[in-house]
Length: 467
Image 1: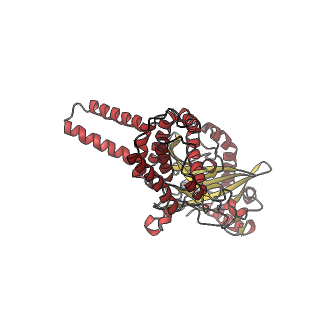
Image 2: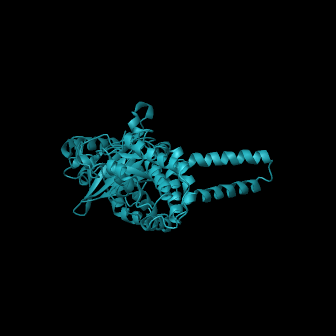
Image 3: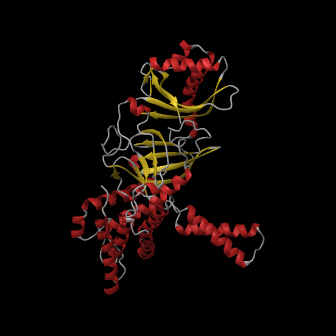
């Protein structure tokens, strides 16, 4: 469910009402115990997050130190030059950290609450809701801080009973959002670990995305020369009915290995989609084989009236806050960026994926060798009996393979920029993308194959060109 604008106004008006109370009611003595429940939860948050999320003050100290080191390396510049450089550095830092910044600020507020520093948390919360008035969860926390100055707070979103009854579903969704944001930060993957679906990425795959639907989290990676590096992670919303999309209109988010197919300009979209949209290739060829239907699965933003949506709130798309989506849009590439969507991501050492990819690499090389040799019987042995390529069964597709082998004319086949991603559920599937060149040629086709393990052997059940 999308939280409506009327509910937004109710929660904001409640916060404002409490602000007015503070103006006209004499300030109460500072409570030593806001409530046992409130402080128990808040203290747990603080213990879990102290080492996980750097505070805004820590970031400020880090930038100040960087400025000092910059001065030392450059000698002793003029005071005006220092101010100019510092201002520029801070502006750049603010620009680069805009995505995820609101969430980080909310976490800092949680930490202060956990340390019983509600007075210190108050101006941070006030600043956050002033800059992001549509951030409903922040509005709720701000309201709790105001309430705590008048009476004990019983739980997150301790609004008056009449408001609580009128907005019960929305309050429940906001509480769930809060828990998921904290859980994701508490259970951050250890440095250097990656999702096991990323078996091997080529230099063409400059970035990769992994979605943990159960945690409402999206992870953005950079594919560097030393391997995948986690750049950032963001809160997301998925389908109203959860995951495992199977049919048009089932309000579920698909699970599998996909690719970003295009970048839709926000100017061409309704306000509902926010800062833009990145469609993915659902249904992929494994989905098609399994008879799944539906279309229009996008990564997109939120309407201007909302900062974020409830964890289960979409018709099947993956939805992010607009600043977070903007970072992703500016970073990833169309057609070459893989998007893994899992109900629950596992995290493994990169060497594990290398070891697990060895047996498949042998199969891919076997197929390539058979095609280079021109031995059709040996080559077609790599294709599954239920093979299909855009409606063509294996018998219809075989003449096309024969034509390609004839074109080789005895020359070897070369594969370049090979990447393969693994999807394991009831079956084991490998999604392979590569450039196929005749030896000596400067250009060729980019192909994608889907392989499945049958009776212990890898077989191709789809093959086609990538536009």
